[in-house]
Image 1 (cartoon, rainbow, N blue to C red):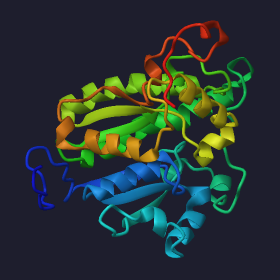
Image 2: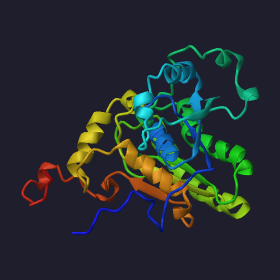
Image 3: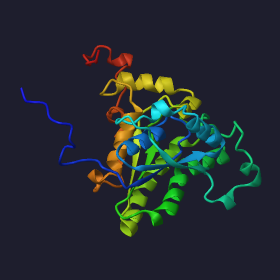
Image 4: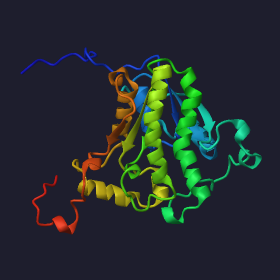
Length: 289
């Protein structure tokens, strides 16, 4: 047997983001993919800045101050993730001048949301355009404002979903269209930002997660059960797995990857059929027990 090695950094391919600054948009609590991505980037040494939806801003900042998130802020070395700055952010407006007066006063409201549960056939023009605005154009707008201040070699990452290319009943209100647009924009932005600024642009297609946002759609438990039954890897996806992928894409290890949709879904995207269907009952399909 070999003798134990000392805990020294391994040579070769380290992920070291010390000296780098990361802005993570859409962080409003500690149980979504945004939080996990911020935490993984912090563990790699990056300075963390977040953008939080205005109605959730006061609660989020209060929870940080009161230590409510301290357990989930704990990094592998035992320290707490530090968030340098929390900026108020509204994804459907590009600048403060665009915000209507009545919206400027809603920071204490609780019913501001985008309806995404209606079938596409029943979605209004305004609802459809609101979904595109919040879940697709917002990424374009962020790139427009951030690319000029990013250093060459920087990285930009968004989150998408398999509904962009497959039918997911219940994922309505124009959201599937918005994710399709987001993936198309990822490729175009990769070209434009790459040629002009040497910035990489990718998107992560993540599997289902029991986040607060997903629970609002109403069928997240069903989607997680479906993934467990049909994905090549029969396990529930963790936020840390998505966070680790984001760190990889942000690091020099992914220096030649841009314009890509990276699937982090236990392989569910590769399946052409649902193997839990009674039609396949007589097939000897292996299952992990």
